[in-house]
Length: 292
Image (cartoon, rainbow, N blue to C red):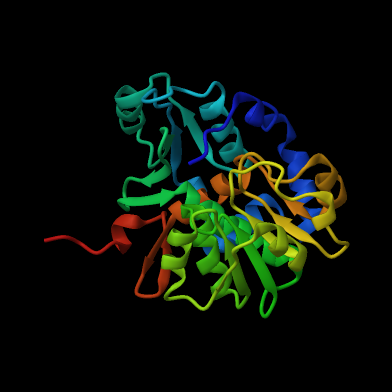
C-alpha cells in the first residue's frame, strides 16, 4: 500500500460534495453509486445494511505511525456515504477493544502494509487494494460508456492493485495490455491470461487512449500522450501525470487518494454471498448457516 502524506488527504472532508458532482459529470454516477455497482448491490440493500450497523475507525501506530487526519478522513468519507461512524478514542489494541465493547460491526484500520475493512459478524476481510481496483474499473467503464472490446493499458500491472485491475478488466471484456518495470513478475502472471505484455512504456503510452495507472511513479504520462479521446483511471499515488497532461485530461480523469477505495470497501464489506445470493447485514442470525 502506498504511504499517503498529510497533504494528500487534508482537504478531502470539505470537498466530498464537490467530488461527487465531479464524478457525476464524468461517469453519470455518484461515489456511492459507483461503489454499489462495483459490489453488485442495490441502493435499497445498501441503505438497509447501513441502518443496522456501526462502523468503527481506529488508528494503528505500528511502523511509521499514525498519519495525521487519516482515521478522521476515513470516518468522514464513510459518514458521507450514510454510515454510522464511531471514531475510537484509543489506538491499536485499545482501539479494537473499544470498538468491540461499543458493539461496532464493521472495523476500518490500516498499518504500513495493509488497509482493511473487517466485518465481525461475517468474519469477512475486505482489502483496500482489491476494493480500489474494483471501484476504479467500474468508474472507468462508466466514463468510457463500456469496455467490451476496448483496448486498455494497465501501468503497474504486476502490483497487487494493478493485477487485480487486469483481471477485472478482462471480465469486462476489455482487450488488456499491461506494463510493469518488473517484467519477470508480470510475465509470470500473464502466462495464464490472454493479455499483451508491453515492454516499452513510452511506445505503449502513444498507442493507447484508455489508461489505468496503478503505478506509484510520478510524471510518466506527459502532454504528448494525451489525445482528445484519452481516458485515465489513476488510483496510484502520486498521480502519474505531469501538470500539462493533467490540464489536458482532467475532465476525463478518475483520481483520488481514498474516496473510491473506501466506498467500495464499505459496499463489499456489508455483503454476504452464499449460494449465488447476496445476503445483507440485517437479520444475520436468521440467515447465516449455523455451526454445530
